[in-house]
Length: 156
Image 1 (cartoon, helix red, strand yellow):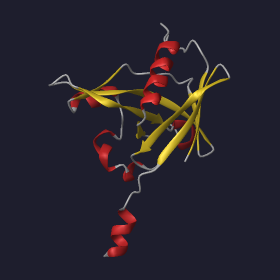
Image 2 (cartoon, helix red, strand yellow; image 1 turned 45 degrees about the vertical axis):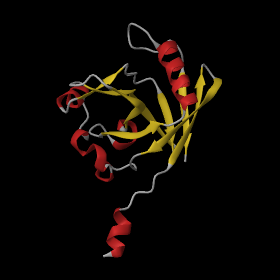
Image 3 (cartoon, helix red, strand yellow; image 1 turned 90 degrees about the horizontal axis):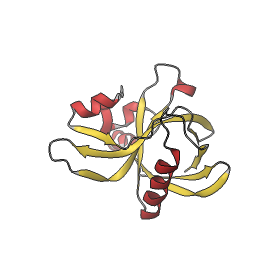
Image 4 (cartoon, one colour; image 1 turned 90 degrees about the vertical axis):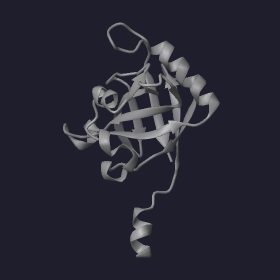
């Protein structure tokens, strides 16, 4: 019984990401991981494993100020992946915006085309929120292609 409990126990870890804009170091972001790389271990997001923006709205949550672009890259544990969205959750009924930012990760590049979207963590430091806000403004564009080359290199 104790062994089964230990197998299901998920240890909170911090993911550190160096951020470069046009090759220039801009700082780093730190995220508290909510799950590991398999959707089955993400108990907190089982209802949105097959992720679509509309699915969050259906569950009374939505993403505000999303950054959506397939050109954004992240290297997590030696895997080159795509970021799907970075934003805040907002409760549609109350209008209240969550104070933490959430990252949605598209694993298609290394898991195949039917790969699922995961929530990998929340930004936990005030400085990180300021950097993310800078990234949102500097990346805006009408055709959803970032104005700058923004890269994340992450490690545990």
